Length: 528
Image 1 (cartoon, rainbow, N blue to C red):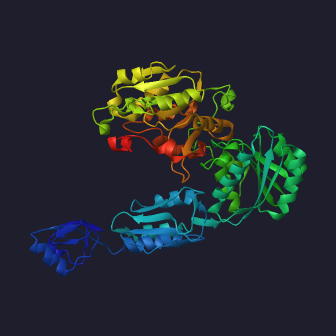
Image 2: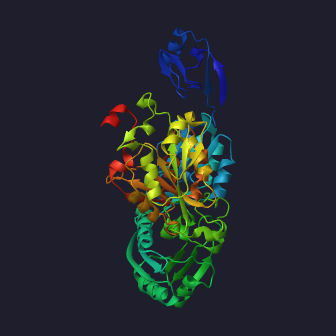
Image 3: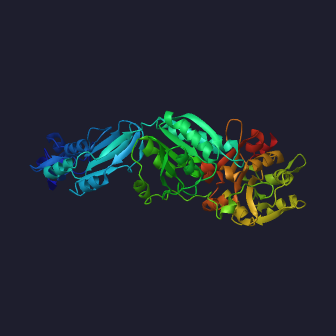
């Protein structure tokens, strides 16, 4: 291919290398005509950069189309090439299968030719783009294109074919029924995009005989059996693997180098795969269970060697809720210390000259109402964050058993007060409410209900109140494990901005909208 500047009249039949504006826009890649040449001259261009193909060159679109057609395997369609690019799409939902060695070999043929794909074994839905062939210059040598074609089909989608799921949930006295209900909901959501569904769920005691009987019952009428244990599998001889063997099945592999997901077990009962789910499978977040489940649903081999090869890339996320040390896994109850941070440092700019927190409601300063609710709910310690008009706020609360922390950076936004308050809590505080000083209708009963709902052992590390329509309100209750998560907050943002990223750790309590959403920012709202 010849590339370089020429006079406009010499550019006819060549490919424009760079977009040019001549009243109208002539885009790069355009094959120039005599009309284009005339427009260029009239616009004052004395030269233009073009490319001309040699006899053994293949135009970028034709090259991309040839290569994409060659690499597309089963259940993959190729879209018409344009601008040197041909995109490949999944014909059905399923598991993306790629041959990395062959794709690497193709990308090594010539710098002009590139092929990019999604991750191997990605779950894809029908119509999703799974790969793209891009010719970088305006043409590629025919010999290189032919070599790329010779690589052959190396991208395919295996549809999800195992659709009947048998679910076993085991029970122990310490495990609440609500946890089992949540596990089922999360599994249904996880399966929805695959076309699979639970055909039967069985709940049995967490002991080998009961689980073995359930496996034998479900395996003949299921394509996959999933076992969610009330207690995690910690050894190849533990309850669930023992039950698989007792049922007449086999255990193929225990453990995987994916975190979360380490404690996964896979085996079979006859031709039906049996998966012992790790505890993280109760969460909707991506974990190692997803990787194995997708392969099994697509009837793709899951071997011990394959599982051991998942280590690179297997660290999926930092797990805020992981107990460190293990004995911190206990729920927050009356024996634990639950405190409160009351944010009372704001400038009340929309209220005018008067500090809204010291305005009287029912005969008492507004800020006293949320503080007294916290005291009536038995919260301790209660830390009030002051800033603007600190002396007045302190005086309004001087007779109450609370402590004060001044936030000199209050003008920088709500986040500074929140971080100051959490930092002021001592190590004995296992969880804390974040209360707003301008929400006087919050009640002690609501705080008690939220405190009761905080159950880390059931995955409820944060509690948020909602109105009957599902809208979030305040206050928020969070386990101290989430205090560091809020450390990166900046500006006028509260905890909600970060905590929505941890939806699987949130439990909700429905409350009257008046007490959880109504605050006072203006004289009109106060008068109303």
